[in-house]
Image (cartoon, rainbow, N blue to C red):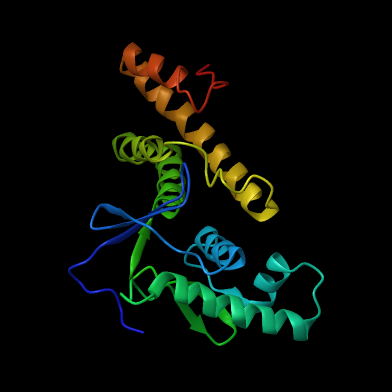
Length: 205
């Protein structure tokens, strides 16, 4: 399968719903199966970590025996690749290393990975007293959190745990950011944080 041409940029947004973009323009994905879509979401959540096939099988088919699970996984992975390649060879979505898999981040960028990295970096920089650098990361976190993480999957437990992690990271970064704005006497920005529609319970104090 061909790699994405260097002239193209593929990005994925997960906050507010799974959406794909090519060069800034939304593109429709015709998923070959719901399991294929879930497998892709699970790999997005695990980011650049290699995930063993047995772990993915257990997530997708809990309690399934190995032989059936292996067959199901092979079929679902093929359907995932087909969904994201098609006749136009959109991009090579999944890398394999033995029995482990991960998203091919040489081909795409994703907001949830950027969100997590910026949140963790911003919190660490604040703890070290590197305020200016921290502020840039914290503001990026707030910009990325446009809506709930993958809201179209409300009952999937693995996605729900990731969604809760995103909420916790957002709570932590917003509190730090509000403290910075208060120290700068930016009451307008503090007020904006307090009235975020997607974070109604937030308190700055």
